[in-house]
Image 1: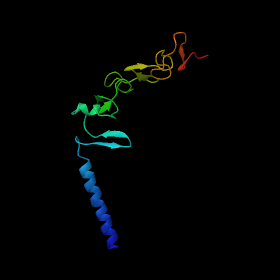
Image 2 (image 1 turned 60 degrees about the vertical axis):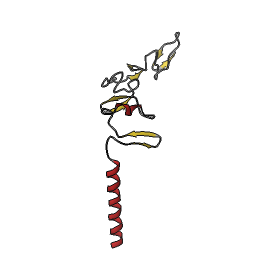
Image 3 (image 1 turned 135 degrees about the vertical axis):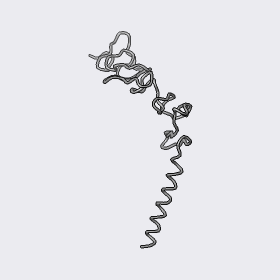
Length: 123
């Protein structure tokens, strides 16, 4: 019983030590599952958003974002797209009717067809 208690205390000590050393802010960039997890503040260090694998190269509310595709920060920080619209090329568009972004960003309909219900030449 004493041995089990000793092992449990040792494991707790190791866990506390590891969490204390890995939670130091503004210094570490770690890679996990092929994505970069940035623990630094982009408000203080904006170049952190330019690291390969970052979500985007812009910094809004202390988070790296892509202003060309982020529906909460579309074109500029804090510009949120309304319901039913998506952010394409930094502009909020309705993918159900937009000729240049029909159904998704970059899906351009032919000049002879129109965008209806997110599909080119529906009917």
